[in-house]
Figure 1 (cartoon, rainbow, N blue to C red):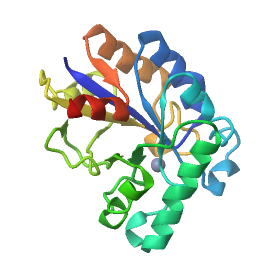
Figure 2 (cartoon, rainbow, N blue to C red):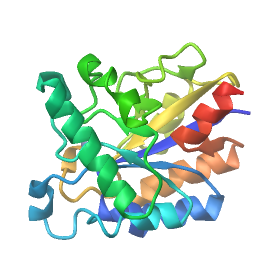
Figure 3 (cartoon, rainbow, N blue to C red):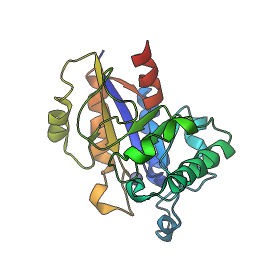
Amino acid sequence: MKTIVLTFDDACRSHLEIVVPILEKYGFGATFFISQPECWFETPNAHLTKTEIVAFYKRGFELGNHTMNHPDLRILSDPECRSEISLMNDLIKNTGAPSPVSFAYPGGPYAENAAKLLPDHGIRYARTTEHSLWTKETDPLRIPCYSVCNKQLNNFREGLELLGTREDAALVLLYHGVPDIAHEHCTTDPEIFADHMKYLHDNGYQVLSMADYGTVLMN
Ligand SMILES: [Zn+2]
């Protein structure tokens, strides 16, 4: 089966209000990566608060760690990295959800210094923004993706050609807000997003969270 892994970064309010109902309609899994820097709350109604994010878990989706303050981890010391990871782990656990097993590097680039610390914090899978497929040979702490944003359906379909008909790999899709009212450069229009999801459904893709595909790869 052709497999897509869906990931959504930055805990945008639109994830809960627009994305989740569409995913539920198709029975798709997904991972929502949570970060909570203070400055994000200067744009009213752009982001979900720490008490609101539990809704993803309650509705059957995976909550992932995207650090507390969304820093460039490559320039932080080990104690600073550990603090960023564990503060978000604690925030997620305090909602009643399980401790995260999935992580996304803030801003996207692989951070080798942070990667070596992730297993100590229970993290098994970590996503970068490097562009490739996720296979059995992939370092699970350096999982690549395809950053989608506002691509029209024909461009989206071209992006899926990286996976083609392969059944031994997954293509991880990365979205930000749908729409993203705080970060225009990575917004996706709700109508375009709905077209993407309908295309995946109509063309027989299996759509999973990161943790669920990680389990598939191990078996
Ligand atoms: Zn982010």
